[in-house]
Length: 177
Image 1: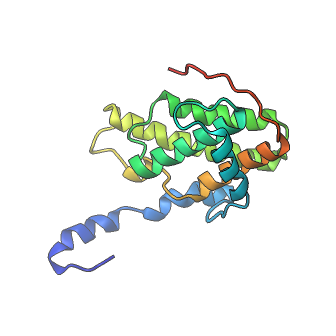
Image 2: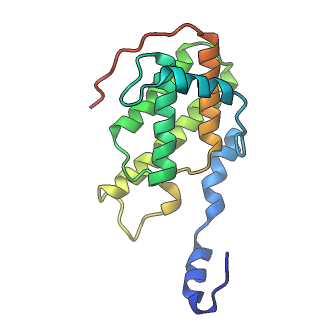
Image 3: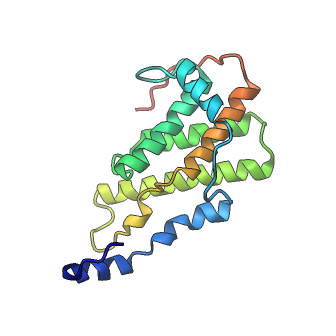
């Protein structure tokens, strides 16, 4: 932090925010500072199977599109636009990967834990945004997880799913309104 003598009040306020607290869950899941290992697969999926707009017509593309929507909402908007679509994305990705039977129990628990944490953050932001949590009671560190590691981990799992299913799996557009 830069030191500005005339801003001592801001420094005191920053001291009250526990920035490390947002890493508790990802550390427990063992994915803090995770680095992607299937970026080439993700790029291929994005290029070949994700539509320019709207939902993808392949399951592989739609899973990656949803994961990127979750990342974008958290990192760029702090989950302040969170709605039932994002919650549905978390549940859909988790359920699809679990039903694939590709992942060992420990891996699946990590995937589910990551998606549940993203969902918990989003629901907290939603509660604040809709007035269910007051300005006096809010903890902004709980709105969104904004580091890439958790999203990279999920997208690597989606890449593994796509690698295990190299033929396009048709995905019918869903009305999740």
